[in-house]
Image (tube, one colour):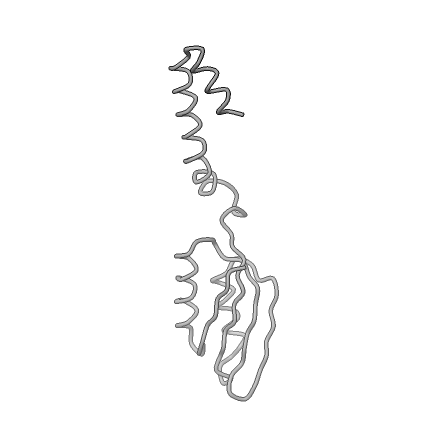
Length: 123
């Protein structure tokens, strides 16, 4: 609908007005979403992920979970499965969005004491 209006305005000789309109449209469509994402509410920056963490069974699971709570924003689901050789912690949680943030979380979780293996899946 906007393009037809610009075409009619150019045909009528309103070149300056169409140029200003196109520049405003470009600014709004290019920069405004990024600005709102950075300045806006936290919900726009959050990402839901599924974590599978394999822990040494000799480690204190409560300590591992407390350290995980400091890294994530919110924990939705938490499952703990145990066997003789390893304990698996499955959780669905919220982290601050971004691919770099996802890799940062992976590296921070993988160096935690007692953690043997980490799997992170974006939902």
